[in-house]
Picture 1 (cartoon, one colour):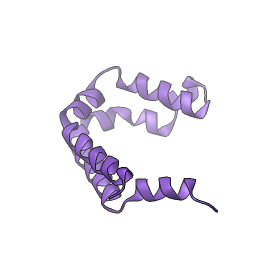
Picture 2 (tube, rainbow, N blue to C red):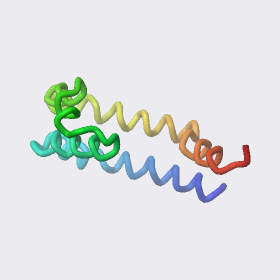
Picture 3 (tube, rainbow, N blue to C red):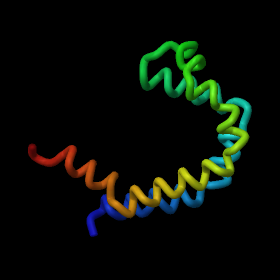
Length: 97
């Protein structure tokens, strides 16, 4: 087992253990602004543009249904790890072309 495989397993365990922390973060009133600022920083878009976007406008619904979404998040991470998507992609990115 490569070290990267152990990291992928650790990632899943951390996500599964972070369920309550994730819920609290999503439900926090400041989470929309953190989301807006994070997306703006990564994309280079103006925060006002991000705030007016479809995903940001639907943040309130996301917050109200966080319990539904947390299980989807955990399952998607678990599935990605089972399929070794992260480690395969990482290895592919650094392998010879």
